[in-house]
Length: 120
Image (cartoon, rainbow, N blue to C red; front, side, top):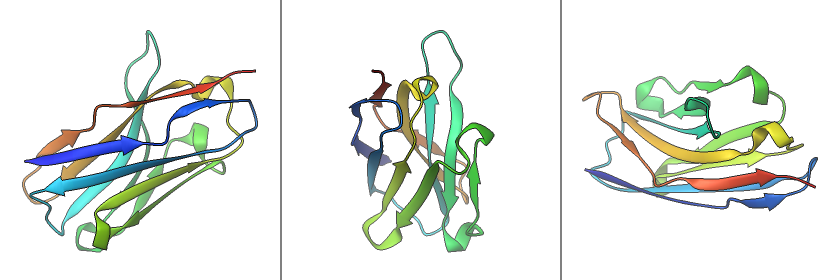
Protein backbone atom coordinates (compact mmCIF):
# COMPACT_ATOMS: atom_id res chain seq x y z
CA UNK A 1 0.00 0.00 0.00
CA UNK A 2 1.02 3.57 -0.72
CA UNK A 3 -0.37 6.60 1.05
CA UNK A 4 -0.34 10.03 -0.60
CA UNK A 5 -0.75 13.33 1.22
CA UNK A 6 -1.29 16.48 -0.83
CA UNK A 7 -1.08 20.14 0.11
CA UNK A 8 -0.74 23.55 -1.48
CA UNK A 9 -4.12 24.18 -3.08
CA UNK A 10 -6.13 27.34 -2.57
CA UNK A 11 -7.67 30.41 -4.13
CA UNK A 12 -5.60 32.54 -6.48
CA UNK A 13 -6.29 35.32 -8.95
CA UNK A 14 -5.80 34.80 -12.69
CA UNK A 15 -2.14 35.14 -13.57
CA UNK A 16 -1.07 34.03 -10.10
CA UNK A 17 0.95 31.02 -8.97
CA UNK A 18 0.54 28.05 -6.67
CA UNK A 19 2.76 25.14 -5.77
CA UNK A 20 1.30 21.73 -4.98
CA UNK A 21 3.07 19.13 -2.85
CA UNK A 22 2.50 15.39 -2.62
CA UNK A 23 4.36 13.12 -0.22
CA UNK A 24 4.22 9.35 -0.65
CA UNK A 25 4.75 6.81 2.11
CA UNK A 26 4.41 3.07 2.54
CA UNK A 27 5.59 0.45 0.05
CA UNK A 28 7.56 2.74 -2.26
CA UNK A 29 9.61 1.10 -4.98
CA UNK A 30 12.28 2.70 -7.15
CA UNK A 31 10.40 2.06 -10.37
CA UNK A 32 7.43 4.41 -10.26
CA UNK A 33 5.72 7.37 -11.84
CA UNK A 34 4.20 10.16 -9.78
CA UNK A 35 1.91 12.75 -11.21
CA UNK A 36 -1.01 15.09 -10.93
CA UNK A 37 -4.47 14.75 -12.38
CA UNK A 38 -7.36 17.17 -12.10
CA UNK A 39 -11.11 17.00 -12.27
CA UNK A 40 -13.37 19.98 -12.82
CA UNK A 41 -17.13 19.83 -12.08
CA UNK A 42 -18.93 17.87 -14.77
CA UNK A 43 -15.72 16.80 -16.47
CA UNK A 44 -13.60 13.68 -16.52
CA UNK A 45 -10.39 13.40 -14.58
CA UNK A 46 -7.45 14.31 -16.80
CA UNK A 47 -3.69 14.09 -16.62
CA UNK A 48 -1.95 17.36 -15.82
CA UNK A 49 1.66 16.24 -15.51
CA UNK A 50 3.64 13.16 -14.59
CA UNK A 51 7.27 12.35 -13.92
CA UNK A 52 8.86 8.92 -13.90
CA UNK A 53 11.69 7.78 -11.68
CA UNK A 54 15.02 7.05 -13.32
CA UNK A 55 14.33 3.33 -12.88
CA UNK A 56 11.09 3.80 -14.80
CA UNK A 57 12.59 5.79 -17.68
CA UNK A 58 12.89 9.26 -16.17
CA UNK A 59 10.44 10.93 -18.57
CA UNK A 60 8.03 13.80 -17.95
CA UNK A 61 4.66 14.36 -19.57
CA UNK A 62 2.36 17.39 -19.62
CA UNK A 63 -1.12 18.12 -20.85
CA UNK A 64 -1.01 20.50 -23.81
CA UNK A 65 -3.11 23.01 -21.87
CA UNK A 66 -0.45 23.47 -19.17
CA UNK A 67 2.78 23.27 -21.18
CA UNK A 68 4.93 26.33 -20.58
CA UNK A 69 3.00 27.26 -17.42
CA UNK A 70 3.30 24.23 -15.12
CA UNK A 71 6.45 22.41 -14.05
CA UNK A 72 6.55 19.04 -12.32
CA UNK A 73 9.54 17.91 -10.29
CA UNK A 74 10.36 15.25 -7.73
CA UNK A 75 12.66 14.54 -4.84
CA UNK A 76 13.03 10.78 -4.94
CA UNK A 77 14.93 10.70 -1.65
CA UNK A 78 11.86 12.22 0.03
CA UNK A 79 9.29 10.42 -2.16
CA UNK A 80 7.78 13.81 -2.90
CA UNK A 81 6.47 15.34 -6.10
CA UNK A 82 5.84 19.03 -6.71
CA UNK A 83 3.75 20.92 -9.23
CA UNK A 84 4.67 24.55 -9.80
CA UNK A 85 1.74 26.29 -11.47
CA UNK A 86 2.31 29.73 -12.97
CA UNK A 87 0.09 32.07 -14.98
CA UNK A 88 -2.99 30.30 -13.67
CA UNK A 89 -6.22 30.65 -15.61
CA UNK A 90 -9.85 30.23 -14.52
CA UNK A 91 -10.01 27.03 -16.58
CA UNK A 92 -7.35 25.53 -14.28
CA UNK A 93 -9.94 25.47 -11.50
CA UNK A 94 -10.39 21.87 -10.38
CA UNK A 95 -9.65 19.35 -7.68
CA UNK A 96 -6.07 18.20 -8.18
CA UNK A 97 -5.21 14.61 -7.32
CA UNK A 98 -1.78 13.14 -6.74
CA UNK A 99 -1.15 9.76 -8.34
CA UNK A 100 1.45 7.09 -7.70
CA UNK A 101 1.91 4.34 -10.27
CA UNK A 102 4.19 1.36 -9.80
CA UNK A 103 5.90 0.55 -13.09
CA UNK A 104 6.67 -2.99 -11.89
CA UNK A 105 3.31 -4.07 -10.44
CA UNK A 106 1.01 -1.65 -12.34
CA UNK A 107 -0.72 -0.76 -9.07
CA UNK A 108 -1.95 2.82 -8.82
CA UNK A 109 -2.83 4.93 -5.79
CA UNK A 110 -4.56 8.28 -5.37
CA UNK A 111 -4.43 11.11 -2.90
CA UNK A 112 -7.53 12.69 -1.41
CA UNK A 113 -7.37 15.73 -3.69
CA UNK A 114 -6.73 19.42 -3.13
CA UNK A 115 -8.90 22.23 -4.47
CA UNK A 116 -7.41 24.85 -6.77
CA UNK A 117 -9.63 27.81 -7.57
CA UNK A 118 -8.59 30.55 -9.98
CA UNK A 119 -10.90 33.52 -9.75
CA UNK A 120 -10.86 37.27 -9.46
